[in-house]
Figure 1 (cartoon, rainbow, N blue to C red):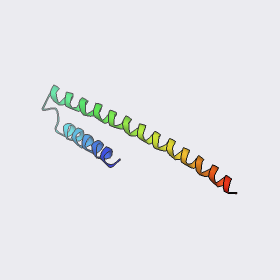
Figure 2 (cartoon, helix red, strand yellow):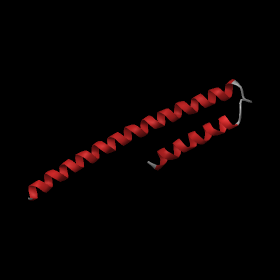
Figure 3 (cartoon, one colour):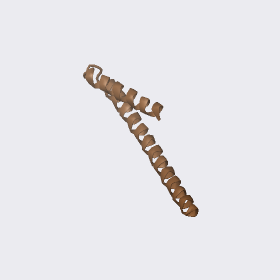
Figure 4 (cartoon, rainbow, N blue to C red):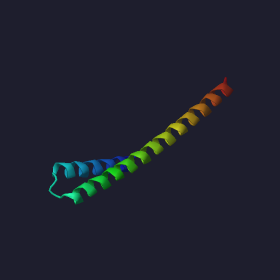
Length: 73
């Protein structure tokens, strides 16, 4: 998970640098910014998928624990 967040941080920092750099680069800077935003969106989607998978696994584990606890009683 740390690598994923590090990747998001790098994309955000690069995007902030592109914005802070002004419009001196013209169309190329705009294209770079768009590419960084696309990468950020992709990273966010991957993060959400992993988060949903983790939540599903937690629910499954809790369900199994409840069943095991009921068997003991």
